[in-house]
Amino acid sequence: MRLIKNGHVVLKDEIVKADILIDEKIVTIKDNIEEKNAEVIDATNLYVLPGLIDVHVHLREPGFSYKETIKTGTMAAIKGGFTTICAMPNVIPYPDDEKTIKEYLELIEKNALCHVYPYATMTVEEKGLEMVDFKKIKELGIKIFSDDGVGVQDDKLMKEIFYEALKEDVMIVAHTEDMHYRPKGASMHEGKYSKQKGLIGIDSRCEYEAIRRDLGLLNKKNRYHICHMSAKESVELLKEAKLNGYDVSGEVTTHHLLLEDKDVSGTNYKMNPPLRSHEDRLALIEGLQSGVIDFIASDHAPHSESDKAKSMAEAPFGIVSLETSFAMLYTEFVKKNRWTLNDLVKYMSYKPARRFNFKNKGEIAIGLDADLILVDLDHEFEINKDEFVSMGHNTPFDKRRVYGKVIETMVNGKTVWKG
Image 1: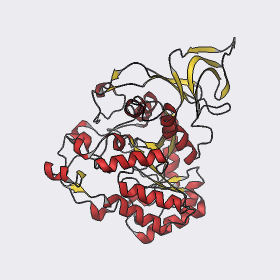
Image 2 (image 1 turned 45 degrees about the vertical axis):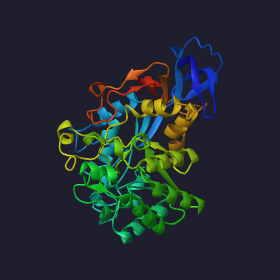
Image 3 (image 1 turned 180 degrees about the vertical axis):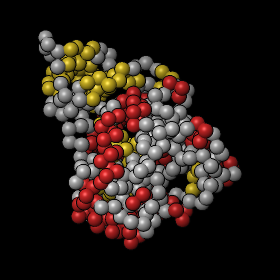
Image 4 (image 1 turned 90 degrees about the horizontal axis):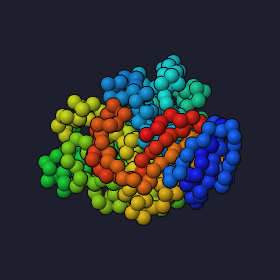
C-alpha cells in the first residue's frame, strides 16, 4: 500500500484537500488516513491529478528508431504527466496484419513505461488501396484504426471501411486530408503570412473537405473521431454532425490552441495540419470550451535535428509536445483564469478516457486505476529542449517560462517518474 498525504486532490468537479490510499487501484479518499503499513508520499503544496491521456502519439519504433523509441517516447510521456497514450500506426512494418501486430504488441509490452494502446492501420501499408481485416485485428484486442499521416483518398474504399468498422464495432480515427489541396512543397497555412514569407501554403479545404466527405459516407452509428482539427469550418461541420445525432468526436492539439500562422518562424513551426489563422484558433478554443471539440491531444511527432535543419519545403511536419503540453496549457489558460484546473483535466484525461472507453482511467475515484501525477503549480520554470528525455528536440516552446511542473508520475500505483 502507498499513502499520498496532504495533497490538493483534483476530482472530476471539485478540488479537495485529502489523502489517497492506493495499491494498483485507488482504495480510499479521505480527509485524513492513517495506515501504519503504507509507504507515505508527502504531497504537501502539490496537486494530485489523474494521469493524463493522449490518444495521438508517434513513438516511431519500429522503423524510425533514430527519431524516437517506445522507451524514450513513453519516458517523455511520463515526464509530462501522461500515463496512457495511443501509438499512431505509421511505423515500419505497418501494424496491418495479425503477425505484425502481435510482434508490435510484444515490443510495447517489453519497452513501454506507461499504458500504450496501439492503432492498427485502416488500409494495407497505409497505401489507401486495400482494406485491412478488421475482424482478425479486433480479435487481438485492437479497436482503434487510423491511416494517420495520409488519409484515405478513395471515396468507395472509405465507404467500405466505414461499413466494416460499424460491423465490427471499432472506431475510425481519421487523418482528414484531401491531397488535392496540398501542393508539393507546402509548409504552412495558405494566407497572407504564407505570401509574405514566400512559402507554399495549405488551404483549409485540405482538412474540412475531407471531413465533409467522410460525414457524407459514414453511418450515424459509426464511431468516428477526427484527428488534430485546425480549421473553423471543421468545427462547424463537427457541430452540425453532432446536432444530427452522429457518433462523432474531434480533438485539437496544444499547438493549434496556442499558435497561429503569424507565429511561424522556422521548421519547428511546421506541422500538419499547419498553424492556421487567428480566426481559426479562436474557433478551436471556442469549439473545445463549448463541447463541440471533445478533448486535447498532442500529436507528439519527434524528428532528428538533421531532418528539421532542412528547408521549410523539405523538412518533415511535426513537433514534440509530450513534455510541454500540460505546462503550456496550464500557464496560458488556467493561470490566466480562462479555464479552471478541472476543465483542463477533463480535456486531457477524463474526456479522452470516456470517448476511447478506457473504463478505469481518466479521473480520481475509488476503484479506478492508480494512474496519478503530482504537480507543482506554484513555481515557474523554463522549458529547455536540451533537457528533454524524448529523442526529438523539435519544439517551438524552447525557453518559454511556464508553471505546472510534474513532480511524480505513478502508473498502477508505482512511481515511474520523479522530477
